[in-house]
Image 1: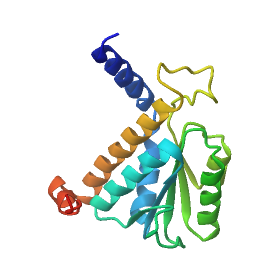
Image 2: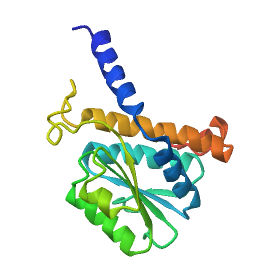
Image 3: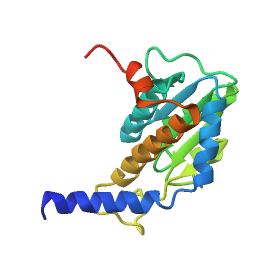
Length: 184
């Protein structure tokens, strides 16, 4: 199989999954972000990397955004929002972070492949990405390695939300570029 064939398979899978995302779930999460004093992003493994990329873009928008676990992350409190990314919705450390944020008065949300999971149950809001997590969803196959389709869709959905927030906030690419790192 050629590289272009594999790329098309990946693109087709991502497009099919994202077409199923509930617009109202996304709009509600965007409202939560806009209403928050600060935004915290969390996730484990590759989902954590996707959430770090989302936090970076939120910062580029001019929002106060931090990644849970970084040395400079401030304490979470009432008026903040924590957004977790978890394909399975069962990652124990992510669940503990959601519970800790909620116990300190922050609103919580998860972007997950499993809206009936323990993390989803612990959150105030859920955005369901209809991507299989292979070791959990053997009946919903993907041609890609385990978890990959969810992680790709998580990043793509977060980037789509950044576009939506840009419009809501009246932020231009130029505004975002001024907030980009200058250490390169």
